Amino acid sequence: MTQKGSMEEFLAMAVDAAKNAGQIIRSGFYKAKNVKHKGLVDLVTETDKTCEDLIFNLLKLHYPDHKFIGEETTAACGATELTDEPTWIVDPLDGTTNFVHGFPFVCVSIGLTIRRIPTIGVVYNPIMDELFTAIHGEGAFLNGKPIKVSSQSELLKSLLATEAGTKRDKSTLDAATNRIHSLLFKVRSLRMTGSCALNLCGVACGRLDLFYELGFGGPWDIAAGAVIVNEAGGVVFDPSGKDLDITSQRIAASNPLLKDAFVEALLVSE
Image (cartoon, rainbow, N blue to C red):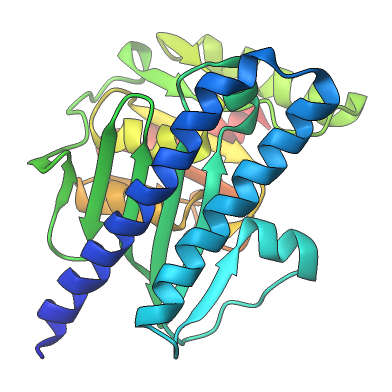
């Protein structure tokens, strides 16, 4: 089998896993609103866990030699190191707060790294039925149609997405809001949609021009989205402007025309 053939097979398998997990998320999403608080936490945890088990079981069946890093497993077993081996990196339910509130930005994110390079990306939002896919070197797609980053070249006309992060201590929040305050003078507007993976896909298909986030959960939030942005002609990088390290919990993404101005704006906002 050619390498290309196997890449396409990896992608098809990831899509299959994402769609199956998506059905579980969809049924929980419409159920979620009537559950009392403690039950709500249980529903999220249960949905998360069921989806991750389903995805890993399917992939392990076909690729027993591959490595696996998942949000749930990592939470349970501590940090997992990324090696050169083919590694599936999975967030079974990105946007858990959205899931709880019935806000339709939730997704499954499945990425495959080979020699530490994000090579395959699948992000599926089962509520809006949007499937983002990419293979390294072969372009990015939304529901099978090619997608491209925006051609916006002016920061002032750009739509920026970020997230407030999960920490609520004063110094973290002050730093985050000061950064946002500074950036709001330089962009058109700001969105916080509550899903790192979908923000990356938003940049990839041109809905968003800019995105950055500091202190997100782990590589499972960005492993798939990074491939999708790159393949849509965008750039992913560390907010400092350096190369992206997918284990660093820091990311920025934009079209290539905006990168330098965005990096400068981010540095000034620190």
